[in-house]
Image (tube, rainbow, N blue to C red; front, side, top):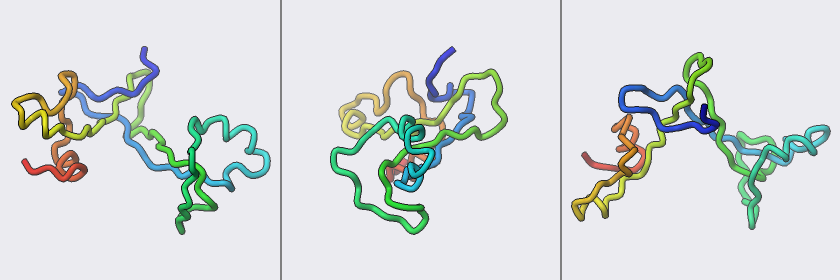
Length: 117
C-alpha cells in the first residue's frame, strides 16, 4: 500500500484531482493558530505580497488540495500528473517523457503546455 498519489496506468483513469488552496493569515487566527500551521509544510523565503478578492486575508502560502473525483474506498489514488513535454529531447530523437509516464489526456496537455499535435 502506497502513501503517495501516483499517475494512472494506461487503462485506468485518475480518481483524484486537485484544487488550489491559498492559506491566509485569518485561517491561522484564534484557536487554529497552533494546529493548522503544522499542516502547512513550507515557508517562503520572501512572503508573497498578493491579495485576492476571493481570499479572506493576506496569503501566507499557496497549496493544493487533493479531491476524489468519485467515491473511493480501499484503493490506490491516481492523479494525472500532466507532465511538461521535453521538446528538446524529442527534437534530438529522444523521448519527450520518462519511460514510466504516458499521456492520459492529450487535450489537457495541449492546453496546459500550449502544445501543437
